[in-house]
Amino acid sequence: MEKIQNPKPYNLGERTKKFAQRVREYVKNLSRSISNIEDGKQLIRSSGSVGANYIEAEEALSRKDFVLRIKISRKEAKESRYWLELLDTKDSQIEEKQALIQEATELTKIFGAIVEKSK
Image (tube, rainbow, N blue to C red; front, side):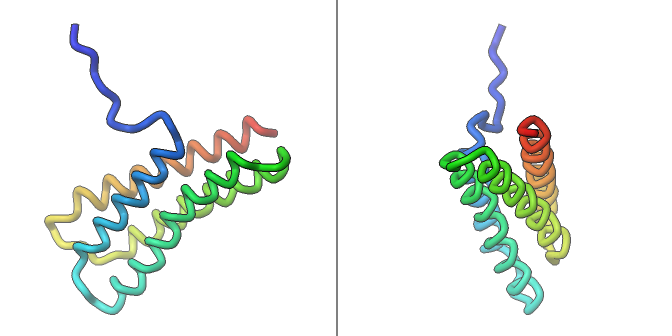
């Protein structure tokens, strides 16, 4: 029996970095309207912050600091979803947009579960 490979890394640091990289590639290919440029900038910032705050959480000095950083990662994942939903997307990019929205949603849920288990 052939082993099915999970396309999503179990390592959350790698997963968040891959999300930010995919977002950057997606934004590069958007049409250059004023709204897409501005919303794209916001999306790039928030998608990068998801992983950056997760890295900070891994190096947390206390449990309280850890939970705070995870909450920020969750907030940034939610924000990324918001900016993705606002972007004006070409037909050829709709599938990737939906996949990125799904990933942002999954990351939000993962970080939410971490917060709950950390209480």
